[in-house]
Image 1 (cartoon, helix red, strand yellow):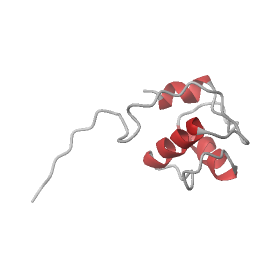
Image 2 (cartoon, helix red, strand yellow):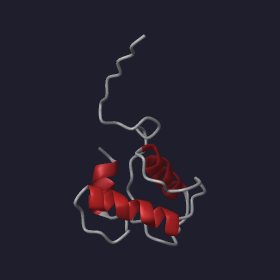
Image 3 (tube, helix red, strand yellow):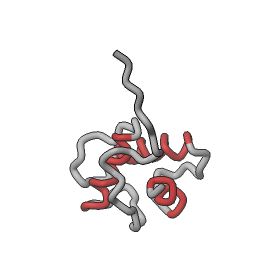
Image 4 (tube, helix red, strand yellow):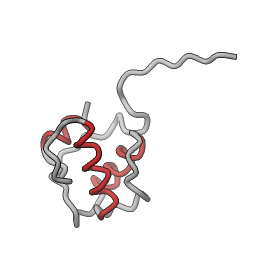
Length: 86
């Protein structure tokens, strides 16, 4: 049996969240939880979804930035948010 799936560019489980905050190592809260979910869903290992922006999340952000030809600093600023919000 063959199953065909259509893709829309939206990662399942993240389509209803809109990132608005500047996030960096040490940030905490719901937006960090959503960041972790979004990165994990895209194949970037942000670790357990605990709402804490630690070294594992920073590493996932750096990989995301590298893969998307962005400035690599491990910070979720405007450019990273723009891509995550697509």
